[in-house]
Length: 507
Image (cartoon, rainbow, N blue to C red; front, side, top):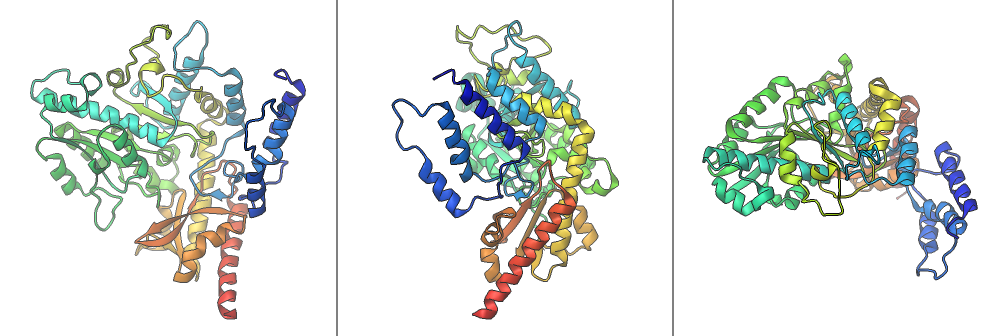
C-alpha cells in the first residue's frame, strides 16, 4: 500500500494537468461546488485507509473543487498573491520530494544551506542591495514572521544603544530578557513610529513583547501615509524611550509609499543615528519597485529610493516574486546582532557543522529550528527570469493597474480613492499595483464587492476608506495580460453597474 506506483503516476498526471491549465477553474468556486466539496470531506479517520489512488482522486476531483484560483488565475485580485511561476512550481515539488531541513548546517551532507544563501544573495541583487552589506538574511513564513524578526533585532539594537549611553555594556534582551535589559539600559518604554502600518506590524509587536499599543502612527494629516517629520523628531526626543521607525514601503490599501526620495531617507537616517533608533522597512510588495528604471515609474522609484539606508527590510515572496505561499524574507545590515537574538543553544542531536564566514547557520539567525527549503522556489524563479524578466512582469502588472485606475477615473459609476485634487496624469503616475475605489451610489457600494465576486470572472477584496466600504484590486500575478485582463475587468464593472441600475428601475 505504501509503494503504490499507480497512485504516484496518477498524482504526477494530476499535477501535470494543473500546470498545463487543462482543468477548468473559475476564479471562485460556485456555491454548489463549495457545498459538494464540504460534503465530500472525510469525517472520521478510516481504519484501513482509502489507498493512494482513491485519496488522490478525492483530492483532485472533490476537495480541490472547493478552492479558489488565487494562484492559478491572473484575474484574482484579492490578497496580493502572485501565484507561482513555472520554475517556482517545479522547485516547490522538489522541496517536498527531497524534504531537506535547511536550518541545520550540514555542508558535508547537503547543499541546502548553500542554496538558501545563494537564493538570498540573488534576491539582494534583484533589489539592488549589496549582498556584502546585508549578511543577516533569512527566509520566513511571511510578513508577520519577517516583521517579528525585524522588531526583535530592532529591540535588541535600541536597548543596547541606550545601554551604551549609560556605560552599561552588552545589554542583551536575548540573554537577560526584556524587563532586565530595559532596566539596565535605563529605559521606560520602546515605541514603534510608523505611518498607516499593516496589521502584521502590530501583531509582530505583540509577539516580541513590545505590545500593540507601542505602534504609533505619526503621519501627516493631509497625507497619512507620509511621515510628519516634526512629530517624528518630537517622539524620538521623548526621555526614557527607545524607538524603532517602521517604513511602509507600499501601503496595503493604496499602494502609496511612506517616503519619496533619497533626501527624505537620509533625513530619517540622520535622526535615527542621533537618537539611537532602528529603521525597519516593511516592503511586503513595495520593495520590488526597486527593479524599475523607466521614466514612467518615477514616483514609484522615488518611493523605493534610499531603502539601502535602513537597518532591516522585509518582504513577501508569495507576492510579486510569484513563489508559493509560506515564503517571506528578511535582510539586515547587522550581521553580528542576529546571533544575539536568535542563537540556538544547540541540543546535542543538532550536531551541525560550524558556520563559515560566508554562510551563517540558519539555525542561529531566525525563528525556527526546522523548516522546509522554501529557498529553492526563489532560487529557481530568479535564475529562470532574471532581473529583466521580473522587471517585465512588474511593468505588465503596473500597466494593468493604471488601466483600471484610468477606467475608474473616467467612469460615471465609480470613483478612485483616495480622492486627490490632481490632474489624472499625476494621479496615474502614483499608481503601483493597488487600486482603491468605490461606487458613487452608496447603496450599490455596500454590495459592490459581493456583486463583483459573484460573477466568478474576477475576484477583489473589500476594505474601508474614510469609514465607508471600498474595493481593492491587487494586481500581482506573473501571467497578467494588461490588454486582455483590462477588457474583462471593464466588462465586469460596467455590467455590475448596469444590472444595479436595472434593478432600481424595476423596483
